[in-house]
Length: 385
Ligand code: V47
Image (cartoon, rainbow, N blue to C red; front, side, top):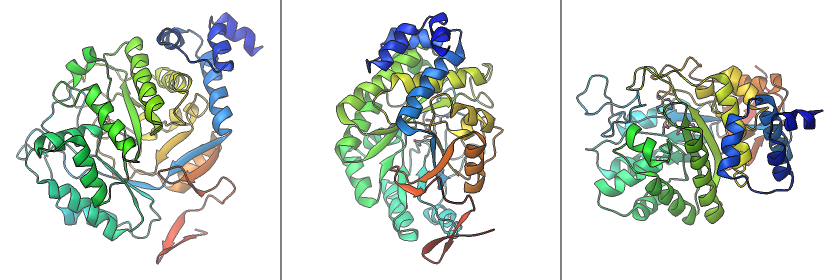
């Protein structure tokens, strides 16, 4: 029955390739985007998702910190950045203020801090190394997923170091992995228009390559639903796939839905739910060498994130807390989710929740109760509340 539907949708040859573990081409990817039958594409993606992960759906207990929104780049999609420190609503937290944000969460069994900042022109490099050292002092053992590849390239240029030297110094100070931000769309036509004054695609990928060589794991994102074509989306996925062939260092691919409020592309509509589902599905099918496809619930919305778990996605990111980039761009999602709510969301979608750490080690398996874990002294315990 489903085979007939896939044939009627004109993608039987692509389904046969996937079954034969043959790699999909740029043309295949574009056809999946153009295929009128979303459920046929979703079925193929779900088959791949279940082959890899069964019903399991991952999330983590994390916190987001944005230490400064001062940023010399003028990306058209960004609602968060302020060009100079004296712009209205510009802010830069002191190290103590950053550390306080973590101290205030002492009762939470966090496993990850995810830091993303603007490209601040005036801070010393020690601001970042002191931040990493301080965060590790406040919570030894916490995983620090900090600074996009674009920030690393910016530090290298500003502080006159190579990208590798920057990464080595940050690792020495406590950096554990890189988030996937800053990828946007790799194709030069789009990148020149929407983010012309920051690291280009080759530099982004080169920073990730070096990070992988230094033993770190990283993620890779794609900002979709603005001025890019389907071909440019698939090209983006293929460039990520090629680097993954070389290094194996990417853990997750994260499609990020464009949010149009309060930025220079505000006249564009936000991508539809069907586009979001399809983009996750095509990513699952194109990226045969990346283990996880993340539906970042802040960006997709909660309901679409649940559906994406049947369209190729197997990860929802985490509790997040204090997210600014999407909320300043019009996101209507909550700013925080308890682990209990995430686990319920996953179960209600017919999937099985697994709390993972950043490196996908299991923290709380699917058979554990969904009650909130609380931190008692230095021990994690399960509260019945
Ligand atoms: O690089 C900025 C995007 C990214 C908008 O690695 C926007 O686990 C939509 O990369 N509409 C930062 N998107 C966030 C990010 C991320 C998120 C979740 C998990 C991980 C991970 C990484 O947010 C930026 C940019 O691509 N972004 N503004 C906007 N208006």
